[in-house]
Image 1 (tube, rainbow over the protein chains, first blue to last red):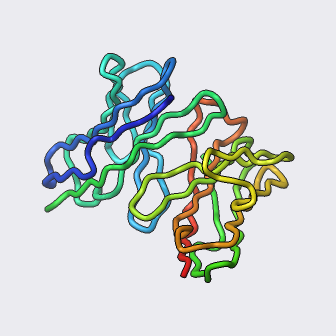
Image 2: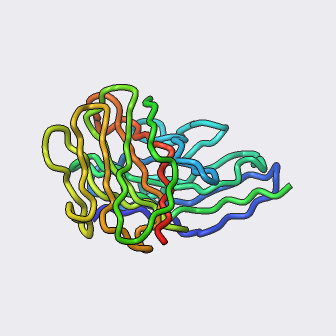
Image 3: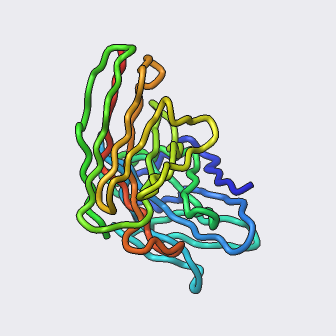
Length: 113
Length: 117
């Protein structure tokens, strides 16, 4: 079965420091992987995706993610965190049959000044 | 991308009643989905809304409880029937633009926040 895991419920980072939000996946075949962000009382916003090609994917708001096939990971990163990055982050994998997205549990990112 | 609107944005309902949530997309889409996000939880897929045919429900969700309509390629409704407090959640409409290829990005509406008393 296809699944996604986000091992950290919460990540705390000081403003200006680099941040990493972890994601691991389990799929059959090549994965289609996505990151979304949810701000309080808002819907989900798309950040970036990995389909094929370069393992380092750049997305919105200065975020990037690194696809690692051997470790089955797709960690979200940003070189310098902002207080405004504080939000709930979801990793997701697309199921080939039917095309639906399966989401990880979510990671609450808190960036303190 | 796709611009998705949902109505209502929020509602407070009494148990035993039903609520219909509307989802409108600014372009024709093949793939449309309904998700539920319970308080403090991740997103769970309720069903895939198929245009011109019955929706495809995920395990744990049934048509009698969550009837879905998809009359055309830009519009869908989800009804939450015979509500109980456990149905208090955010309900999100989601689409994959155009023909809905697997490489395409899936976009989400702003959600409908439902509280059942």
